[in-house]
Length: 62
Ligand code: SF4
Ligand code: SF4
Image (cartoon, rainbow, N blue to C red):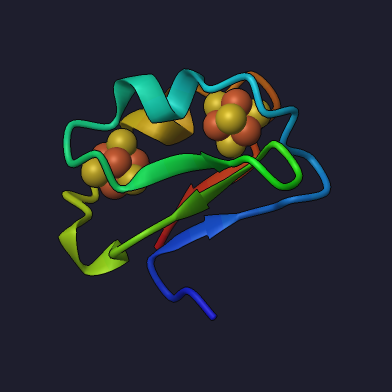
């Protein structure tokens, strides 16, 4: 369970925009279902770039 990078998997379209943008490279598209997931959320800079780039508002940074 994530506490910092919260991804609503029901909204994610797998577009990859957040993955390409993330400066910490902690986001990835899971090849099993083409949904965005996070590796080590403790490395998140909390600058919310992914929140802003996601076209369907699927990511929230807490
Ligand atoms: S807030 Fe920044 S560092 Fe954290 S997951 Fe989003 S883009 Fe990556
Ligand atoms: S930008 Fe949004 S829709 Fe696209 S992969 Fe990331 S979380 Fe999913």
